[in-house]
Amino acid sequence: MQWLQQLQQKTKRLKQEAHVLMIAYKDKRTPVTAKILIAVTVGYLLSPIDLVPDFIPVLGLLDDLIIVPILIAVSLKMIPTTVLTDARAIAKTKQSVLKKNNRTAAVFIILVWLLLIYFTYRHFKR
Image (cartoon, rainbow, N blue to C red; front, side):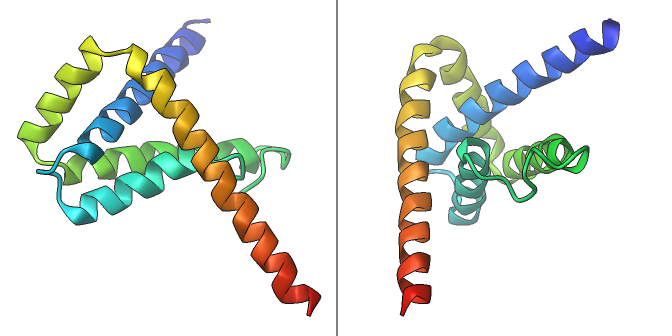
């Protein structure tokens, strides 16, 4: 039972770090390369489509357990320390902003996937 609590704590921390990434993304002091990786990371987190679908036994969940933490860790390392400190402070004080941003980002990502599906369909229909 203790491992379940540890897993829940790690999951909660990852969600908090994802919020920090979204705040750091908006900061002008964040380098462009970091912003690109942050966009990929947050996009992958919010995307309804995974690289390895979840219905595939073991592998479907492993991609989320391995890829997401690695993307978050690398993204955090690319952000300057001052920006990261400021973003963490903002994340602690403004928890309600996260829900609004999540909805907006999720709608955007779903629209991107729908456009990709549409253009792929049109391309192969010819």
